[in-house]
Length: 172
Image (cartoon, rainbow, N blue to C red):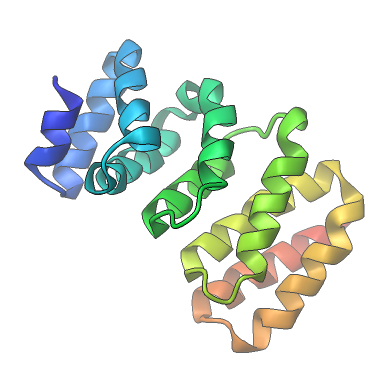
């Protein structure tokens, strides 16, 4: 399969699933997908983001070698929300390497604190930060503050996720 051609063909759940299944069956082709996701033309980046997000739920370990590049990618200006959302979504499903706790926490705290970020990016960031807090408990108060500050004004999804994360970290 020519991944770029397939991404150009159609932007649908069916096509996304087809590409994910292809990558799972041919993991050596993941590098082609990640090249598009990290360095491609904006429309293909957006379409590949959906594939990367779904791939993380199906076979997350394939993405482990791409941690450094995914972190650096999120430091870019003017990223499409799909890139942020699907990258942080992948981090929910992966064990976070200790070496990346600081950078990942900085990125996720930034998203959680930014009122302009979409709810999905904020919710996924909360979950990632919850995982980090269990290894780095001194970040608990900052996470608790940011969630509690936004809880009264949040969407139903934000309130639901925020309440669950607060309950979870209260055990620390």
